[in-house]
Image 1 (cartoon, rainbow, N blue to C red):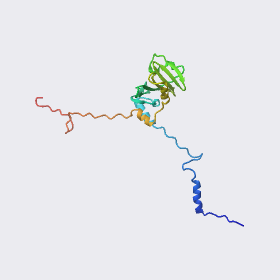
Image 2: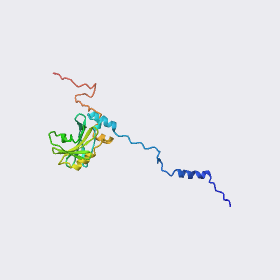
Image 3: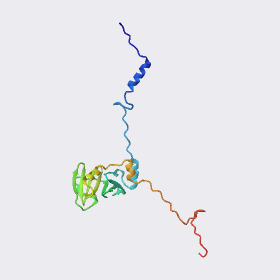
Image 4: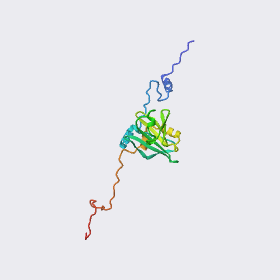
Length: 217
């Protein structure tokens, strides 16, 4: 007995084909599909303009963080010729964390010669800790991280900030993003001048001062 195969109409095949083709998630790309574009580095232009307005080299601007510490905005400024420095304060203990970035390098030979916390004439001890140097001297301790052409330092008083907190703050130091730049650096635009009100200017005429002299001078 010969059975005839049933042929589905074209109109019935179309939904089946669409269902099969749509089983992949929308937006899924195969191995040859285009990769998503990486996000652009935020705040680069603004960082450069704000840093240069302060006299700081943009590549030397860093920011850090530590639990309980907040940025002391008035501490942000120039270090040396074009370096950068800022201080974070613990609101509970008033302990200070100082971040300083400047040109130069630090090696096993030069580490003992560089004072901790800009305290010349004091004995400095150096201990290697991963890629960083742990340094002590003059009652202060510091983590120094050599970067390409500059050194990032985070320092504090030894009896005010534990070493593990200091180390974490040093390792957390990084280049600021757009939001961090806005909080860290003052605007490059000069503040608008506040007009001075003079009490001797009349409310009519051309606004010239009233220099009227009474009878008798």
